Image 1 (cartoon, rainbow, N blue to C red):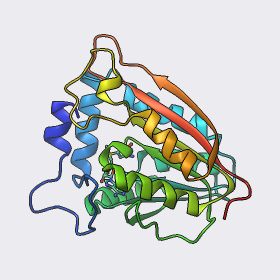
Image 2 (cartoon, helix red, strand yellow):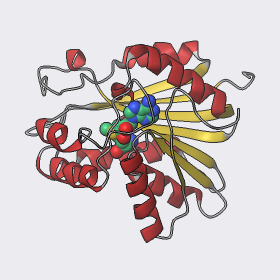
Image 3 (spheres, rainbow, N blue to C red):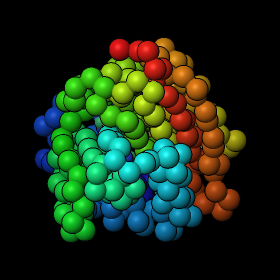
Image 4 (cartoon, helix red, strand yellow):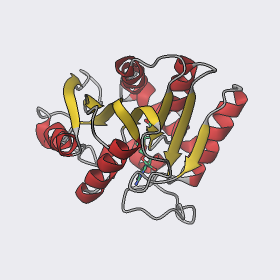
Length: 234
Ligand SMILES: C[S@@+](CC[C@H](N)C(=O)[O-])C[C@H]1O[C@@H](n2cnc3c(N)ncnc32)[C@H](O)[C@@H]1O
């Protein structure tokens, strides 16, 4: 990740989450939001905000739908999703970082937006089969080692209703970038690998799009994947 984000958003010694995962947990609460604001304002040319808006647009959220934000961080995307699904819809957000979840609670409560934020991990989602109309995930997949990505995608397939929608946005892999921002720490995700995992897990009608690296900024570029869980599965 960008140096600034890496310095400010990585787990603080002594404050690491108790929720065990082999994923890279962030646990910096309000400091995450502050670091992100600085990074987006001064390094990423506002692209982080735009990618969340694009994720919401691609999800085509409808009033009354039930939505899960996996790796929700401090809840910014989940809050936006709840506004879209309205009072009849429900939004859940999970993240292993207790400080992230505490901050998400605070932000939603301040705006009187009811969202069920829980400490949890993608590899063991604490929801019944076929619970959600839509699952969202932004900038989270590159935090997971490959076996966990596979496990996580299978869990997403399990909790989605047949025909349910998944939208993933993640930094693109440095090897897939044309010479820009190659020092970006986590290496991002290879869209091709994610697509393979999604097909294996029974997703169909997969579509991708790209938000390319921003000129004169260190924004490394983001790939989006939209997919549907097959109707007959599970
Ligand atoms: C870069 S942050 C993105 C947070 C949020 N989605 C956003 O767009 O701001 C990645 C998040 O993934 C979370 N994460 C790491 N391992 C995870 C796991 N096994 N399951 C779910 N989330 C995980 C981290 O704690 C962190 O909050």
